[in-house]
Image 1 (spheres, helix red, strand yellow):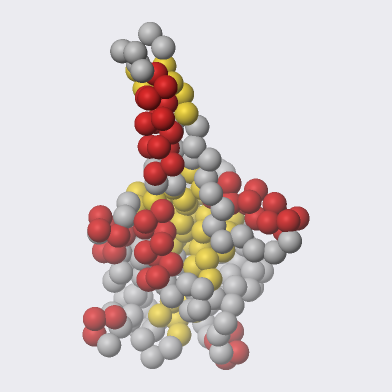
Image 2 (spheres, one colour):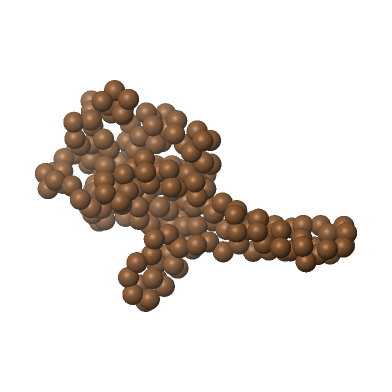
Length: 207
């Protein structure tokens, strides 16, 4: 019985710059994007060409998946975790916990006590968080939710996977635009809105 096998290729995510830079970005993105499993269709009747066309169309519209590392209010038990559970925003599946391979400053700043990861690799702590696999719809929602690219920027960061002994390239929302005094705030390594720091997050609905 013949079978039709299809592979899906992920698309780039906002690549910019000269071809050499775009090529490097594309390679990095392929490490963060998860290719869906091969689609296998059993052909029980004539018309294989039509089936190939249908399968190709399904492949084009299939949601592409990506790894996202969350370290703040989106984590399990934190104030904004509910948005990852809302199917109206897309799909998100928890894959495990991890820490950034490089240290980063994770600070709690502003009048609403928002946890912010400053894009200063090599300074601060190895930050703990959760790894999610999300579909394209959820990724677009998270971009809007995090105010990307104005408030936060989505970049690729290497994450050490807890218990797996390996690393994974994940998208992380960090910021490179912040008041200079934020660099001197206390650095955290495992955010909890109700932690001993006493800086409880003020939810959006209360502002």
